[in-house]
Amino acid sequence: MPYITEEDAQAVYKVVLEKRLSQGVYVERFEKEFSRYVGAKEGVAVTNGTAALHLVLAALEIGPGDEVIVPSFSFISTANVVLYQGAKPVFADIDPLTLNIDPNSVREKLSEKTRAIIAVHYAGHPAEMDELKEISEENGLFLIEDAAEAHGSIYKGKIVGSLGHAACFSFYPNKNMTTGEGGMITTNDEELAEKIRMLRSHGQHEQFRYKYIGFNYRMTDIQAALGLVQLKRLEWVLARKIEKARYYTRRIEELEFVRPPYEAPYVRHTYMFYTVQFKSRELRDKAIELYEREGIETRCAFDPPIHLQPVYIRLFGYSRGYLPNTEKASDTVLSLPLFVEITGKEQDKVLEVLEKLAN
Ligand SMILES: Cc1ncc(COP(=O)(O)O)c(C=O)c1O
Image (cartoon, rainbow, N blue to C red):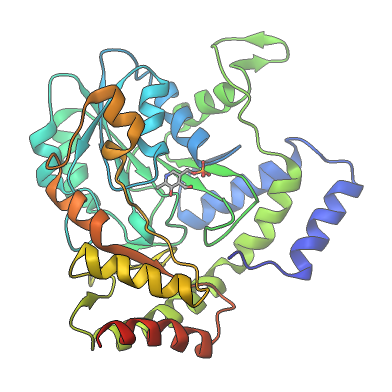
């Protein structure tokens, strides 16, 4: 659930009255402030997180004949954007603890055709960027962070967003900050940012002159005005979510049939999802049923994994057994309600349902 206040509404009201309705000065300001927050030189605001990923691949000229290594335990756009470019997504397995792409599996999936790796920071837990960086440097590959779920997450002292060649964020309303729909690319590569800016707007380099076949992936000033207020509040939101996540974790640690989310000692997990793992799919499905009965919304993020989505089975013929850790995670995960305004009492109710499962 997004956290929206009168201040957000006023910001949007003001920008509409100013008649700033498409990309303009608010977008520019949002790009500057967001990229400064993550510690990257450049920020390019776009329509959504999917467009952000697509634009990075387009700017890197990844295309037919190329392969991009991605996790299957993710939202579908992580892999779809590779197909948009006519390239092939190659799925690597995940680490069963962090649920992030496993560098060892990435090494196994490398081929002559590999051009890039997309590392998703699942639910706000940063991926193993040091090892992935090593692989990308050894093999001359681009390393792209899919940070759609990880605003403000920290890996070994650094906020995610400048740990690879480029990073992509989403500001969809279920994220820790929102612009409604919206996305952002951050990078330290000024040339790449310049090209992405052109591709975002039809490949235009000066008015009515087009250097590339681009897209209309622009963000509006209305969205950016909302984003500026949300960004100002992000650290406060994260502190609330982390505190509430820890409350869940303390209680869930006492249950033997379900595991709270793992948090490596060198990260700040930002809990965009609070995802627990059950001992079996049966138990997980029983929990879903109990939550439905109580009118409590939960999510299976992500089940099925991308390679077992109907369209991927039809196009590529994947079947179960291809990615054991991914499939096990998909079978057993459940994301519990976690948002700024959830009360202690509501959290207790969520926990009681879990505790009922023990009997
Ligand atoms: C890991 C991941 N990648 C990409 C996206 C796509 O972002 P959007 O929905 O803004 O297009 C999302 C979420 O929505 C996501 O969770």
